[in-house]
Length: 76
Image (cartoon, rainbow, N blue to C red; front, side, top):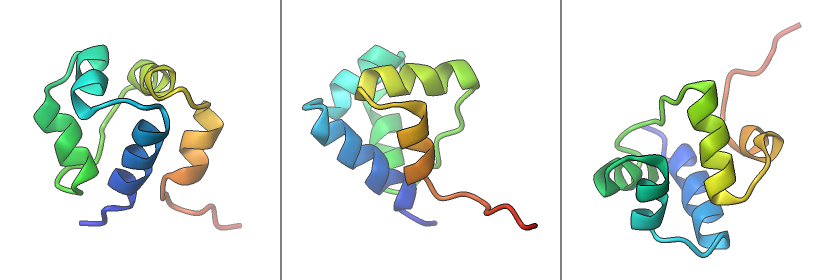
């Protein structure tokens, strides 16, 4: 599994000066969940509301998070 998601979340978390525990507590998740994201064990499956919450916690915009995360490129 790609660790690109984890790399992005880890970088944004570090930039915000937060620990995995702080992110987990702010999001109502376990530290293991955040660790799994960062280590590429799991890909975050968040609702739109949860995604916005993650952006607030990481002090980043939705656009910044979306631009950083890998996704399917639109084909046209």
